[in-house]
Length: 172
Image (cartoon, rainbow, N blue to C red):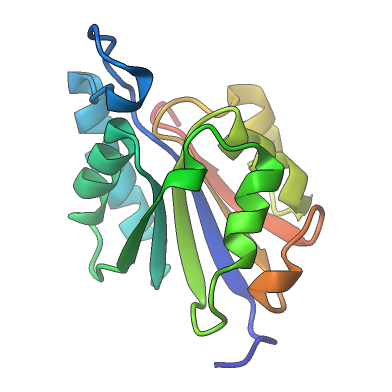
């Protein structure tokens, strides 16, 4: 696999969480979140992106989101639960992604706002069609995802190097 081939990264915000009397890290998905996570998985399957690696926050709601979404994909990627994704800033998320091995062509990061939305904004130096306008208009609600493409090694991923290819949110 050549580092010259464009790589894809999907930035996926966890689905709608419930608010029971538990620590934030332990919050589960709400019923609507469970439905939206599966729908998001079907939309990802429709995108025809073969994911090699999933980097998932250790929070309950992100793990549940991924468990429901990945069931809809034709190919199950290797999954790594990463503590550093929980409450991470865009810069911290870039640092995590920079550690991705170069044999990984396409990856998905399942995390939280404001980090995931901020990362999509920061990475996207350009955008196709109306993807940026839709993302600006909608923000990054629960279960939304952005698909970006960049060339080079994962170590070279930095602000402005990617193209925002697509954006989807449950009400799209």
